[in-house]
Every structure is written in structure tokens, then in C-alpha cells.
Picture 1 (cartoon, rainbow, N blue to C red):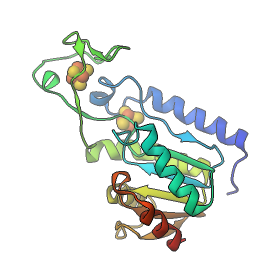
Picture 2 (cartoon, rainbow, N blue to C red; picture 1 turned 60 degrees about the vertical axis):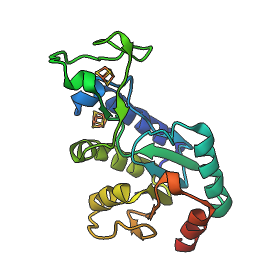
Picture 3 (cartoon, helix red, strand yellow; picture 1 turned 90 degrees about the horizontal axis):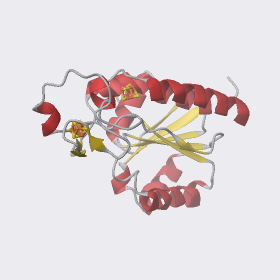
Picture 4 (cartoon, helix red, strand yellow; picture 1 turned 90 degrees about the vertical axis):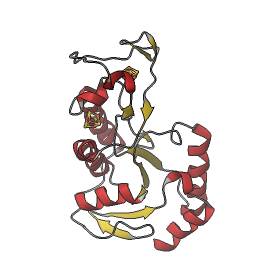
Length: 207
Ligand code: SF4
Ligand code: SF4
């Protein structure tokens, strides 16, 4: 299948994002976040970066820009898009654990206050479970299929493992392994917090 035009990609991404925003497959997570994390960047990308979820690093604009500039410098493209394997950040929360709450609606308001305590949400971000990743992975694979980038950089072996398995590859989830699938070149690299100039050079050497 050919790459889509920018207009086709925009239309399909908007359609997918509408479904993500309404998604309630993991109700225990959607109750405690304002909205799911969506992809950002060039909508005809050459390079697509995948993070496990929208964490402290990815919320730090300077850190993302620094990582992006290392990739621009070594991979020679500015057409970059980034996205997440899990869209709704799981939180550990004593309030929720200790409350018999039968509500299915949001527990967090626009000011990020908890409706159970009337105070700032005190949930602590944690790693997504296997169930959450399995629920959310189809959105990522759909997004890659829509955007058809030349390169897909998978940050961390966990992202590598899940994406590889979705592509039918079961034993390559190690840093600096690479494979081709459906016209794109996939590379597993260290997670975003450990990414350095050397990591970008290593990626270049694998292409
Ligand atoms: S403090 Fe309230 S909104 Fe925040 S994670 Fe706990 S239950 Fe959810
Ligand atoms: S984590 Fe993904 S699958 Fe689960 S509710 Fe959020 S968008 Fe839906």
C-alpha cells in the first residue's frame, strides 16, 4: 500500500484520535486522567518515535526537543512524529484503593482535583500493565499503518517487544536490533531517559 497524502493522513488520524478519546477499554485508568495522550508532529513523517507512555520525560518539552535534534542531526530528517504505546497513564493511588467507589465517570476535574477528596490528584504514575498494553497496542499499530514512516524508533525493550510481537516477530526485543515490516525499518533503542548522541549514531549505523 502506498503512503497517504497529508490530507488522507490527517483525516484517518483524526478518526482514530476520536476513537481513542472516547475509548474506555481500561475504565480504571480513564477515570483518573483528563484525556488520553495523542501523537504529535509531522503528518507525513519519515521518522516515527514510539514511547511507552506519556511520562515525566515526554512531558518535558526541552528533553523531547533535545532528543529530536540528535535524531535530526544524525538521521538527516526533520519530518518526525512521536506517539505512545499506552495512551492513558496508570497511577498508583491509596485514595482509590481505600475507597469503595462504584462510579464509572471521571474522578478528576479540569483543575486536576480528585472528586473523591476535593484535593489535587495524588496518583503516582506507574508502568502500564500487560492488559493495558494489550488493550492499547492496536491504536499504535493503526497509527503506524496510517503514517507509513520510513523509520520507526522504539524506545526501550518493552516497546520493542510488544511492537515486534504485533508484527509477528517473537525474539528480537533487544536494544540495537532492527527489522523490516510493511515497508518500514524498525529499530529498538535504549529508553528515552538513556538516549545520547552515541545512541543516535548507533541508529544511523543500523540503517
Ligand atoms: S487521587 Fe483521585 S483522581 Fe487521582 S488517581 Fe486517586 S482516585 Fe484517581
Ligand atoms: S489505555 Fe488505550 S485502550 Fe486503555 S482506555 Fe486508554 S486509550 Fe483505551
